[in-house]
Length: 309
Ligand code: HEC
Ligand code: HEC
View 1: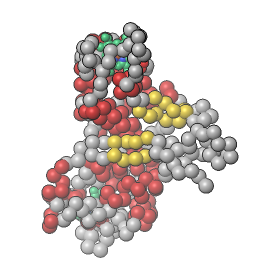
View 2 (view 1 turned 90 degrees about the vertical axis):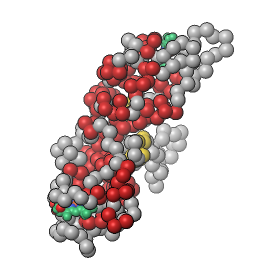
View 3 (view 1 turned 135 degrees about the vertical axis):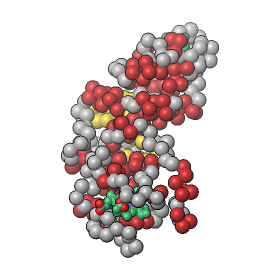
View 4 (view 1 turned 90 degrees about the horizontal axis):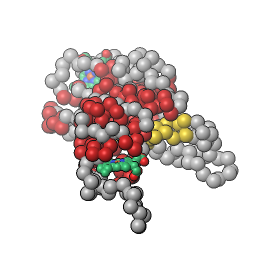
């Protein structure tokens, strides 16, 4: 019996929190019964991800399923009726349709432009784009399709990939350009002391300089750190949490060399969390250039015939 897979990292976007078990959930434990073989972590398969996260977002009447589920479908042919009664048969249909399962930047499911776009449901929403992108990215990796992201072999590779995936629109859009101006309780903003990378943190008053500098090692470690499996091999990147954690470090009584006190607002915590998670998500789905995909809030209002979203 394999143990239930722990969620290894969470990916968020502004519109959705999709969950990926990126690289297995085997906890290092003291148990010696050999049941949790560290070399065989349970990874969520692309199909499982499709079943759990993609199907319900595309299959309903108020989504692609409104037209692509056969029956009253306005178009015919196998490639047009790709939604079926459940996740399993839908997955099989899609898998049988040439070209549908390919890297996110190539799959018609994400990039097809409808001739008639008067019906809002023909437009892939931000939420759908997120899960489709992640799922197809996983498929591309698993099947070694052209355009798949190479899995990082070591921490250095992983940092390079993360840095290359850091997107300034995401940085600004999540509010990270405000980080350098966060105030300490009595000693002014972070940029006052960290403007040139002091203590491994680069927070300059010029947001572009901050963004470009934080891409580099060692600064990038304040965003993400690597995990290793129990054999000591690099496994994956996870959020570092360092900037928030530092604010919670107690100053020993009587000590006079402590870091200036600061509290991180919920808003700033969200900014950091979203920026890091979105970058990890974009890296997994190979959508680093997309910036932030937002849901159009008025999707619901533009459905014809009183369809309920
Ligand atoms: C209002 C009806 C409608 C909805 C909703 C709709 N489509 Fe379509 N779709 C069509 C029609 C009609 C065609 C055929 C040609 C065209 O109009 O572009 C089509 C064609 C396609 C094709 C190409 C099929 C082929 O045989 O080449 C893809 C891929 C596709 N749609 C994906 C989607 C996805 C993904 C969604 C949900 C985000 C969606 N469609 C929602 C009506 C719809
Ligand atoms: C008055 C100068 C000063 C200000 C202002 C300041 N820092 Fe620091 N910071 C330091 C010094 C000195 C260190 C190294 C010693 C230490 O870790 O306490 C440091 C270390 C850190 C580290 C630890 C690096 C690591 O991972 O070990 C973090 C994180 C950090 N600062 C975050 C911040 C943030 C966030 C702000 C703004 C809210 C801030 N600092 C404001 C002086 C400052």
